[in-house]
Length: 79
Image (cartoon, rainbow, N blue to C red; front, side):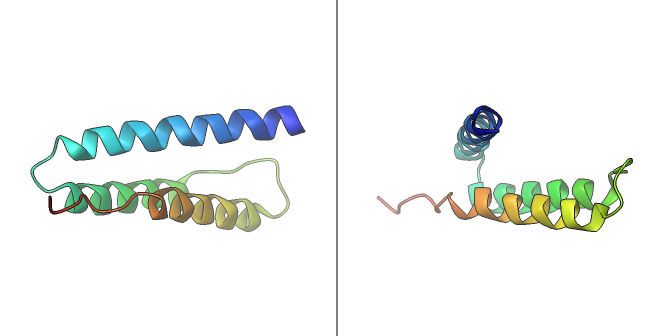
């Protein structure tokens, strides 16, 4: 389980870095991040989770993870 958690953290860090890099190349990085976050949340809300009795719990954890990832990104400095 620790190995799986470590791999998931590595994937989250990689994805966060990629999103931040793309956002930095946009004219309006904050708007890009907001729109991207909203799209990801819509996908999580619409994805079919089969084989579980309580898919709502999985969906809540996924939504919380999305919020945590985007909370790590700060707006660019004014300098």
